Structure formats: structure tokens, C-alpha cells
Image 1 (tube, rainbow, N blue to C red):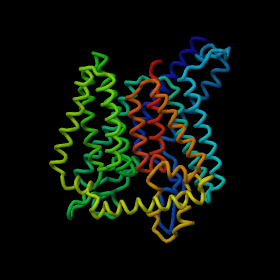
Image 2 (tube, rainbow, N blue to C red):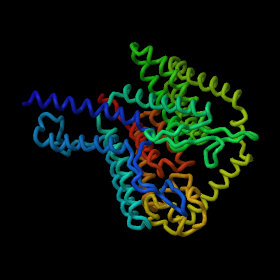
Image 3 (tube, rainbow, N blue to C red):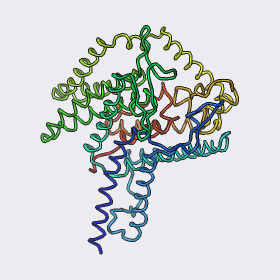
Length: 460
């Protein structure tokens, strides 16, 4: 009986690990069932749509398996479950353990304030959906920080997902078309269509790459993080001589993913990657000071400069068009962002204490500021922190800040500067866009990045 149970345990743990790798690889896919379409002023409104994603089902299944094993298996056969109980509370906690407790405490408080915000929401069903999405993100955070994973396999699954997205990005940019595919959650997009994300260069319209994601900025943010993970993977592979082929493959994948990042024309993603890369560069040049480390990081600098130079040479027009704030589209973008900030200030003044309710920001703008715009105009403010304040109130914002602070503190105390680069990149991008909080894909990516940066691989 005992031997059989140990075999079942081994099978469960192995499947749980590889299912998590599969989830990470499939994270960019947007296959979903739309349970309720969002609508404002007779038009489709994405931020009011209630959907069940394929990845949601996978996360729920993994959580049920994990808790089912721990509680059901642990109660019946505790000697086989590897659960250790601390019999005395006299042993002082380390700073890392204390930080972990604070992190989970702030997550719990954040969950409480989101739940409270539901009662102040004009659309309570939509708010409950937003609350459920938050719980799914926390579930992913829990799984990735609790389940024992092999860091090399984890990094490869992330980088491979990026390569798939980058290949899609290259195909889309070359054909100037996004092909519709319901199984991948991709809607058809063409450069000549109105409402599609493009870059203008003179009379030309250049389609920005979407990958399988809802917007080029989301693909760009995803690839910015993946590029940093790619560098971390390379330095981990350097420690094992048997991974020589993996080193070459890692550099090749970095080049492909960097091309994908450039094709999104996402300035926020470019800035986020630059911030994270500078942290890694400073760590290599100031903290490590090893000639071998500096030589290895120089390979990535060479790839960035070489591909960046070629990209600028062949696509100077759209690049300058994207960077020129006086162009028509960029002027429009800046004006829209300024208007979103103005709307956010108005909403925060009215709802500063408890917020409008999670996922209800756009409805508050519609009901309280302007109800005459087309549906696509009701977008969240392009700043995660302002959006958090507007939706769940000042206490929720403070909890969110404290949560991020303890995450930064944990990495600083561990001197885990390469993981700190991931968190800094995320924080920079959150200052200039909203999708990490407002969209399902962004929320999962936010929790994934935070859990990846905090993941302690010493036990693997």
C-alpha cells in the first residue's frame, strides 16, 4: 500500500510540474469562451466582456490537484506527503521568511479591498468577474512559488513561448496582416483597416505585430520580460558544460525574440526591456566584475546593436514615425493619454476611498463624465497605479504598493539582481500602460513575472 501510494505521489508531482511548464508555454494564447459580451453605446466593449480562457481551466485544474493532494492525501497518509510541521515557535524567523509572510499578508489585504470594491460597483457581475480574475492570478502566484520546478526547464518554456510569438510577429509584419484563428484567439487585422494598431511613415501605414495577443503593447511587454529571462537562462546554462548546444540555441532565440520586440513598435516595452537590461548590465559590471561574465553579456549587447542597426537601416521611416511626437498618430496618442489621465483624476476625486469597483472604471467614466463616445473610447487610464486607485480605492493602492515594496525588498536582501531586473522592468511598464491590471492576459503575466522573480530555486 505504501509503495503504491509513493508511486501515485511521484506521478502526481511530475505531472503537476510539467503541466505548469505547459501553462507557461500556452500563456500567450487567448482561446476563450465569451460568456457575456461587453457593450457600450451599441458597440463592442472589451473591458466589459466576461470570458473563460483555456488557461483559466488549466490553472483551476492545477489548483484543485494541489489542494486535493495536500488536504486529502496529507490527512490520510501524512508520512508520505512530505509535509513538515513546526512543533515550536521559539526559532526566530529569518528576514526572508518574515518578508514572505508580509508579502502574503499584503496579498490577502489586497484581495479584501478588491472584494469590498464589488459592493460599490455599478455592474456587480462584472466586478465579481474581476474579483475572480484576481483570485486566478493569485492562484498562479501560489503555484509557481510553492511547486518545486527545474529552473532550466522553466526558463526554456518561457523562451520557447516567446519564439512562437516572435515568429508570428515576423510573419504578420512581412504580410502586414494578422490572420484570424478562433482556436488561438486571434482576430483578423490589416494595416489599411481603421482601429488597427499601426505606425505611419509619410503616406504608408505599417502594421504593428500582435502575435496571438490582443494588442502590440501586450506582445511587446511579454517579449521584454522574455528577453530578460533569456539572458538569465544563458548565464545558468554557462554553469553546465553539457549545455553547449543550449547556449547557441539561447543566443539564437534571443535574436529572434529581440526582432519580435522591435516589430511591436511598443515604446513602453522598449523602455521596460531597457530598464531591466541596464540592471543586469550594472550587476555584471559592478557587482560581478568577472571578465567571463562581462564577455558573456557583451554577446547580448552585440546582438542588440547589430539587429537594432539593421532594423533602423531597413525600417527607418516607421521607427522615426513612432518616435516623432509631432506626427499625426503620436499627437493623437498623446492627446488621448492626457484625456485618460484627466478622466482618472475626476474619477479618483469622486471615488478615492472605495473606488468604482474592480473592472468598473470604464462604466464610471461613461456614467459620470461622458456617455456620448463610441465604445472603444472608454479605455482605462494608461497607468496601472492610477487605475488601481480608481477601481479599489486608496487602501487598495497602498496595499498594492506595499506588496511590490516587499517583493523588491526580498530580492534586494537575496542580492538576486537578475530577478530584480524582471520586477523593475514590470514596474516601469506598469507606469505607462494599463493592461497588466485591466485585461486577463496582462493580469496573468503580471502575477507570472512577480512569482518568477521571487521563485527560490535553491530547493530544486
